[in-house]
Image (cartoon, rainbow, N blue to C red; front, side, top):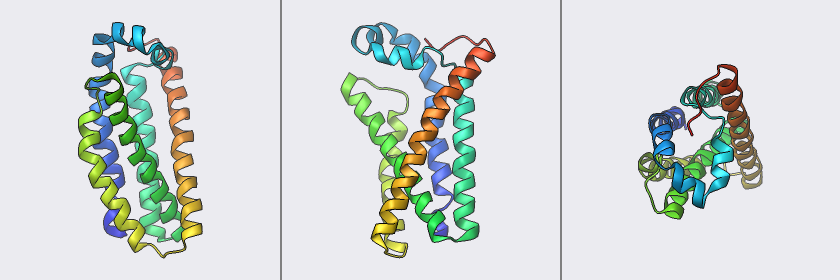
Length: 174
């Protein structure tokens, strides 16, 4: 398991750099398409700025690093299972981006790195499941808890983006 610990934050930041770099320009370029076909996205991104988005990514990266370090240095089964669940949540995030791109039939920032990272992270998750002690009920519950942590933090990160954008009086992405 130790050999996989740092792959989670590395894969995460590799993917999120594509989003930070490309999301604002892509949203501005595709504003009409979004307004016509997917107006609910406008509500989601109305208070987002590139700086706010980067702050949220930094917060998520700190959590990825902390969870990976805790798993590596405590070698606690519970922490490894939470790490696994968070990594699964990240993997699902890649699938969502691929689905978004298929839905709108267009490249979105995050698609390329999702396609690159999905097989790698899925393999790491598979190998981790094979290497962890096989207490399936405990693994399932703690992995689910890790996934839920990712979802809750994602929602909190979105609120952080909006708060920071408004507080700093930054121009929104769209």
